[in-house]
Image (tube, rainbow, N blue to C red):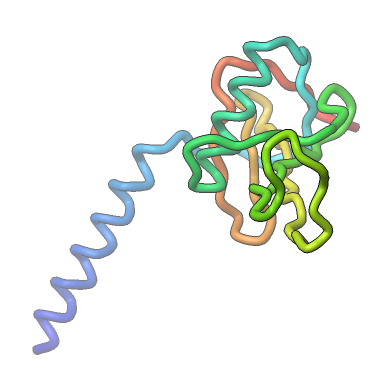
Length: 129
């Protein structure tokens, strides 16, 4: 019985470590960052990483100063408002805040409450002092 538990524990640890190897992980200590450019390519990469962190197919980013702040705002889906229609005051959904972080080499978006992260590929970011 004990050997079965030990074997199962080893299998779970081995599976978990092999799954973690598939994702780019930060190589060192993380620091708040800002993008070096807010061109269309950088913003699409940011949206793609935000969608990955939020487990959605696509997201809509809110207003932000991504060149000077690490805060990335992801707008909620409006459940009552018609597209192009007036704002419906019955919808109490609030935006989700993500943080842009860097390990000195790569940029990552981090969801603070769950600590989930995704690499923002193809962009340059700088550490904020």
